[in-house]
Length: 363
Image (cartoon, rainbow, N blue to C red; front, side):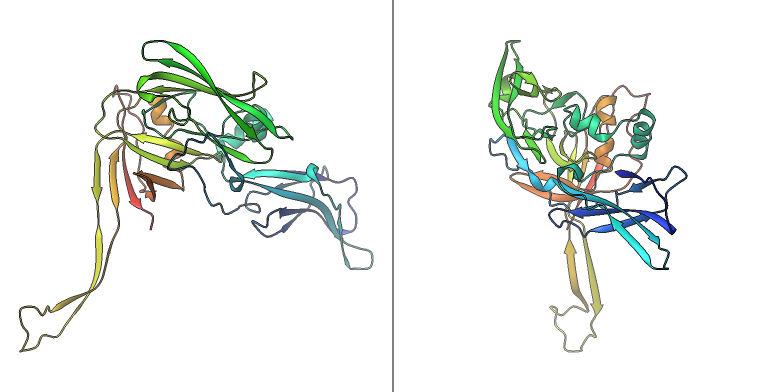
């Protein structure tokens, strides 16, 4: 995220352009950056660190049947003001601000980060994140357009409208049953501007019987016209050794679900601190000479992702670098960390691909 500021007049000594960022809900303190303009009287301000914000991640689990859920805390508004500073004729420092305010200088920001390579592609094509995702109606996920899921997987999509007014919309669901019968349904929803929406797109929340469905696609519509991209989900009805579900924060501000269906191992590693006790001639069998002063353990899992095609394996990259991961344990979710490793995604000598993941409790 950056801001480019230009001036018509460079005056005085030590002239600098100023950029002030403020959080409308006090998520972070206001800050001012100062940069000397270049030969074209411009300065580019990198605001990524300035507007970094703590986030209390929210998502539906257990599922309640709701489809459109407003998540205001995952997208927050900041305001920007611009100014200048220089040493005046009398030797004193002069600071002038434009005093900008209102919707024109308010920006909605998300907790996420695009890669340096993605930013380089934006630079080369003169495109922006806003154009690619918000303006074009993309869901805030980088998952493939056609996604293989388990019947009970808690599928989630995330969406921000480009419109400035509240929108009455429908989630259009086109589905195909196992007997090749095709049908559709609609779910009504309301979307406010300047907020992120969690869309529970699992079959159960949509009113579908997953055991009967072969595949389905979802898209947001207004007045029978699409306002979002379409995502297709193919339900895998095969028998798998294990079904493990994870949630994780993705790079573009949303939270994805991940289905692991390979071998599952659970551990409980422990560590302790001990001290030696002087033995006494009168000690009985119950008296140890080594005392355990402290002992604690944590939960740990080794899970095979299960066999996947190369596209599914490549989609794991975002999961592997996610800083927020939760393991579904019945109706509970457990914060976990993914242990670092080489994480080989695929081998062209193999027809099918898999990867083993090691997770530990984040407490």
